[in-house]
Image (cartoon, rainbow, N blue to C red; front, top):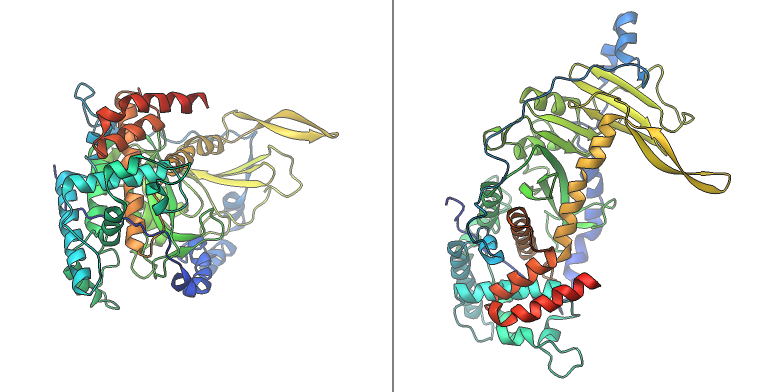
Length: 514
């Protein structure tokens, strides 16, 4: 299929290396936290808009700015007919035999890995020509798959350093890695694994500082291959989620972002579209900086629009997002494209209600609801422990839902029922796929230390491929948990599936018991 584009890989290895050179620009990156949380095209209060409100006739102004309560009946918005471009779910037949490795190879095809080997061999030849002293023989496709298998093995079995996996004089010695390849061979492949040809890298690097320079040149062939495979072999169900994912990396590069509000503070920012039901990564893009990312209507607006291709997806989808992306213009434009949307929002953003009669205050009781509707768009405020702001083109403001909350009364914790707006309930339910997707990725995250930023991103591509392959297998058969799937995948990649099968079963049973 068309997904077999020139992929190239870059892993890492040498865990003993230091990061002193990477930390030189760390202080400069702290300033980027503002950029991560602020979209200049959206997070401003327009004076022009405020003046227009001031100049409105009093009756129209009151109508525009008056909040309604949960006792007021909201009009249910027009229901968008769900018309997916393909039947939702895996685009594979369960009648065909699909092993973990065959599913993984749909993302990392043999032709792509062959191209990876070619570029890796070229990089090794270049390094030796520069005077590096180590033995090298050209890496083959089978050997590269074994190398990837060891990366997943090391992600599942944690040791303090790469060398520890080959130690034979310790109580905790591991016999398996030495049966796959020698330690020095693993290291030399790690030093040289390369996704793009080094000669082409040099040509692109000479364009640095110009509009023709491609920030993603070293990863783009693989990125395009993975993205196409993600969309080719699975069609998402109706509920989608858009979120950002930060791939941890402290390498000194202009593409690294610092965000103090995230668990991962420093790294590369991915914008991700995922299926809300199972966490499958449908599509993604890599943020390379505000000057290189298209932002005609603002970064948040254009990011969502770039991930939602109606020709590929179809129409009638419901898209959930957090407050970085949500704006009235985005939601109304998506509705015109026959995509419903729902998301938390920031009160200070343009075109959201700023100040109004009958609004919530800090003294409002828990469970209080206020809402304003403007055509298909409803803005809702709900008092939980603090005010929660959500807008939607899918839901009515309040349809009678209630939630159970733990509250403290007279030094005793009790469960109490509170009214909850429909958009808030739906948002909490369907944005959970973001946590599910991240959780699946973290189980066996292939993150070694590396001095090369593109190798760090490559490792995340491995994670996406393995996680999506597991979700496909689960949708088709449902007879393996994640641990069992990864064990079988590692065994197949390393070429020891038959030999390891009995041991595998007992390991899985042990993990289930524990």
